[in-house]
Every structure is written in C-alpha cells, then in structure tokens.
Image (tube, rainbow over all chains, first blue to last red; front, top):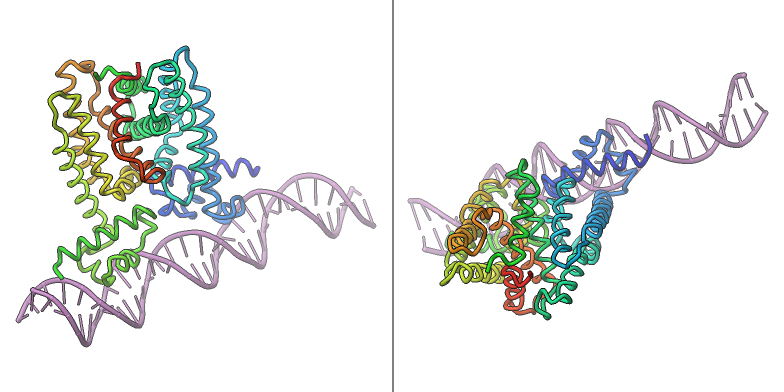
Length: 188
Length: 188
DNA sequence: ACTTTTGTACTGACCGGTCAGTGCTAAAGA
DNA sequence: TCTTTAGCACTGACCGGTCAGTACAAAAGT
C-alpha cells in the first residue's frame, strides 16, 4: 500500500472519531483500528497524535477555503453572499464531520496557527464579500465586516450541525432559503 | 462550609478549566485544586466526574434560559428579537467560559439530555419570538422558525467567543449593533 | 450526634509513544 | 542467473506515566 493511501485512510478514521468524541477523548488505538492499520503505522506516518491532528486541520481548512473562494461569485454582492452561504452548506454536506471538529476545537489555544489560517482564508472570503456590499451601498459604511463575517460563518456552521444531527433528510435548499431569508432583511 | 457553597466553588473551577482545555483533558485533581477543596470532596458532592459535568450543564442551561426569557420582551417582535440577542450577549459577557463549553461539547452525544433542554428552553425563546414575527407579518409565513432560531443562537455564540478571544475590550454595544444590522435587512 | 471536609496513600485501567522485527520489492554484486 | 543488500511501509507487544475513583482516619463544622 502506498503511503498516501494509508495517510488518507487514517485521516478519514480520525476525523470521524474526533467529530464524535472530541480530540482528547479519541485514542490513537481507536483511530488505527477504524482505519484498519496498526497503531505503529499512525506514528510512522504522522509522528504524534498532535501532528496528525494539525495535518488534518490544515488540510481540511485549505479545502474549505478553496470551496468558499470558488463559491463567492455573483453579479451583486448580495448574490455573492448567498452563493457563499450555499457553498459553505454544500462543503459541509460532504465533509460534515469536519464541521463538528471545527466548532469544537476552533477556539482551543493549542491550534492557534490553524485558526489563523481559517480566519485569513475562509472567514476572509465572507469579509471580502461584505466589504463589496458596503462599497455597493448595501450596508452601513462602518459595518464591522470581520465580526459580521464570523457571525455568518458561525451561523451556517451551527445550522449545518443541527441539520445533520436532527434532520439529515431535509434538502439543503430548505436550509439555504431560511438563512438567506434571515440575512436579507425580510425581517423588518 | 455549607454544601451549596462547596458545590458552587467546584462549579466555578470546573467551568473555567473545561472552557480552557475541554472536558476530557480536565482532571478532577485540577478542578479540586483550583476550587481549593480536597479531591475527595468533589466525589463526595457529585459522585463522579461525569455527574459533576452534567450538573454543571443543567445548571448553566437553566440560567441561560432564564436570562433569555427575561430579555425577550418588546413592543414589536423585532424589538423583542433585538432584546433577546442583547440578552444572550450580556449573559455570555458574564458567563463567558460557559459559552466555550457549550460550543465545544454541545453536540457530543454523551450529553444529549442537556442538549434537549437547551433546545427546548433556550432556543425555544428565539423560536417563540420568530413565530411572533411571522404572526406580525414581518417574515414569510413558512419560515422555519426552529432552524432560524438555531442560526441566530449559533451566530451570537460564535461572535461572543471571537470577541472574548480577540477583542475583549470592545463594548458589547458594538457587537450588538453589527448583529442587529445583519438581522434586519439593511443588507438588501 | 451527625454531616461534611481533609489529606494521604493506593489501585487498576488506559493511553501516547517506542522499538525490534517482518514482508516485500528492487537494485547491486557474484 | 542466483545471492545479497538496501530501504520502505508496516506491525504489535511493551513501557512509563496519568487519571478517575476508593479507602480511611482524623478534624472541623453545625
């Protein structure tokens, strides 16, 4: 078996288990067993439990950021915002376990480096769209776009997890419509 | 010392440590030391680490729900919504460690009972306000108020934690204005 | 008297990390 | 052609430390 294959099997096992139990509660033994490899193999490939996790975070954040960048297009800033929300929903539809991991571990000081990357690359997409909205006169000029970006990101993240846990059969479109409704001022 | 006093000292120590390190990584020894009691006292009062944590969750969720219920008043549904958001921000301003704990542990299957209570009592306040908004014709009739309630709650929670971690000096009002701006359709 | 707390010592399960060794393939040497 | 060596990926038993929980006797509170 190639090294890359082994690594991705371990990644998949680790993300599932950590999503269910959290980082600390997940043992390397359990990850190895779920991945179908020996415990030593995990250490051979990643060096340590923590290194495995940081590699996993790095890799997943990169993919998330790319998905958001690709989604964040639209004629108007408003259309781009809706598209970004849909992009985030769609991404987590496929990588749902990562949503749980992000929410749970995002603010632990241990992974500040990964969090910085998340803020810069993923939240940055929302912030850019919101700045565009301000330029187009769709929002107050002194809107705090960074805080607003975090708010929207967290909103979508929370809803994604609730949906996966409670209504997995519900179409994505339904959730998307509810969020978009909240965001463009039907509430007024 | 009364039993109640001891329990609340242990609660305070536990919530701080668990907010920093997570449930699993926090040891009972550390909780006892921070609380200034003997380790045996913790077990005498709570029986087990898990029982301590569930009691802590239960207790905190009850207080959060009460704070939201008290805050959720206003002439219009829109005013009530703003007030509820401010109520949530204010609550977590005082019990910020609990915000971290909620976000990190909320979706662990282990505490489903506590999560059910959170959904019923805390998210329920948002859901009720949103239903009132629908009645007043401020939102589409088929708005999914449960999903929207989760969305707003998660949004405020995420922003609270970001604020505490990154801009602790910022006045609450600033954050509140940004969120309210997002929620009533200045973006359109 | 009865409840609660303390401090210390202990147990046993568990877990991250290690390491000597296995299996395999392919190049190097004869 | 046959043998040896090299190197990579993987294995799983094992080790040392950690931690929830227990035991208990003495002290403090009420």
